[in-house]
Image 1 (cartoon, one colour):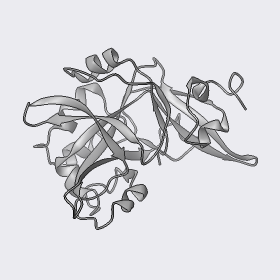
Image 2: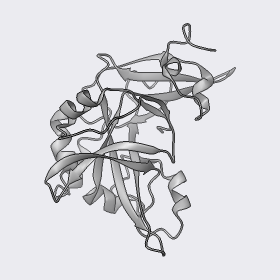
Image 3: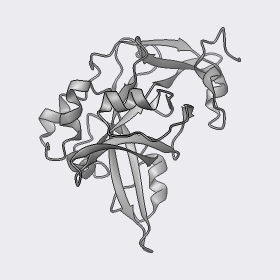
Length: 227
């Protein structure tokens, strides 16, 4: 699964990478956790342009009776996303990209779980494949939420964990964001671990285990960070 990630890239870098007209001021975040607001890129159909907006992490299906279900739907498996009732409508029509500077996974060891930080070798932002949904409460209040897709781990992540986020290549952004592209086979071709982005990893402090902790020291290599 993917249960924690970071976003510290400057707004101008995100605007250029995702072809955005504007990007709001973003404070660097080094410990983004489920149920928190996350920045996502999606297609604004009225303007026919991409937009960066904030959605709550943990997808609440439009048919849900209780929004609490979102805390259990922070990830969607790429292998089954087209069929699962919680995700299939969003997969067909409401896809998004979740910018990330890197993500964490935990390795099981005799001494407990050791967190590792994964990021692009060139430190360029990653685009994690996501889905978004709009849920309306009985009182008319609207809640917009998202989930991150995961796939089998590549050779870099595999020694630590068997799953990893789906990373979408820049040349595939248009297809992934296009709500008229509904072919499961065509979209499914984007969801494997071979995204063409070479990742590197290093162990980090277990301080990342607590969502309240934040700051660049969380991504520092363990020898340099706080134990």
